[in-house]
Image (cartoon, rainbow, N blue to C red; front, side, top):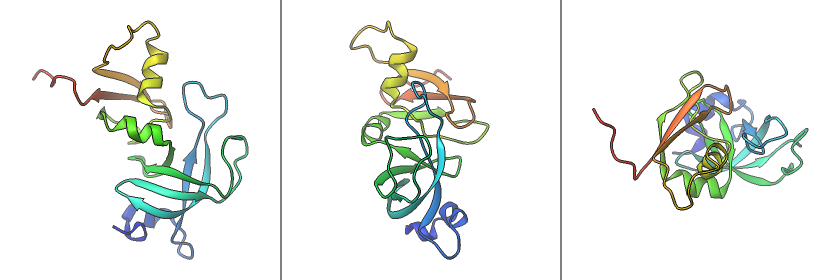
Length: 156
C-alpha cells in the first residue's frame, strides 16, 4: 500500500503535503536525559509499518538527530510514527506485544528489548532467556507487556 493511501497517514498529513507527517523522535526512554520531541518528517518509503523519512525540522534538544537526515520510523498503534533504530527492528521481531498500551494504543518501544531487560534485571545470568517482561509506554507511561516468540504458550 502506498503511504499516501494509508488511512492513518492520510489523516496526519496536510492536504498540500501528502508525504509530510508528524513523528516522535527520541534518544531512548530508560536512560534518556532529554524528552522526546514531535517533529515533521517527509516519507520516502513504507514497507509494512516501517517508514523511511527525512527529518524536516531541527530537533530542539536531541543533538544526536539532524535535520535533513533520513531515519526509520514505525507507525505505532497510537497512530503516530515513532523513531526506531535498525538494531531495534532486528530485535523486536523476536517479541510480540502481549498487552499493548491500553491508554494510547502504542506498540513501539523507545529502547531495544535487551536494553530494557538489562536495566530492569541487572543480575540476570548471562545467556538466560526472558520469556516475558513488562515496561511502561514511553508515550503515556501505562503498562506494556511483551512475550518472547520462543516462550511457552500461556496456560488457559
